[in-house]
Length: 169
Image 1 (cartoon, one colour):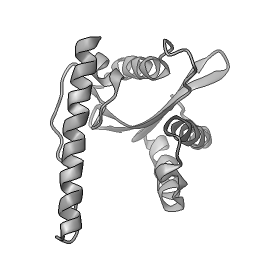
Image 2 (cartoon, one colour):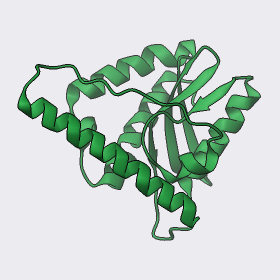
Image 3 (cartoon, helix red, strand yellow):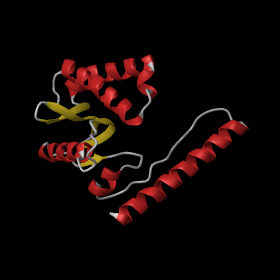
């Protein structure tokens, strides 16, 4: 766990690079307002313990960075960046989360929540699922309704794919 704010901010920059490399696009990290918001959140949250940035090393090389929120004895995984290599057997995400969970247990925290989304490590490490509600606020128009239907279909398809992968494992 990175305890010094300047190191946490440097880790956030690396997280953004790793995340963008994995997905092949710049995404939200390219938005200056998004970056500024999270830099301020990290700068204020790390000293109070409300934000926890964890860096996983293999030797001298960073292979994973987790950006978590801590509230009321629970850890909430918000974002991550991992160094993936050609050898698909290496699991920097799995290793990073296992170490973060062990750290959380050592601190006496009551839970580690992966939040929404579908990733292989979630089905391997989670011992419970909690339904989440997605809320979109905007004008009621045909485009918004189509978008809502597409998002719902994406969630259903993601759930089906996750269950198929879990059954195949």
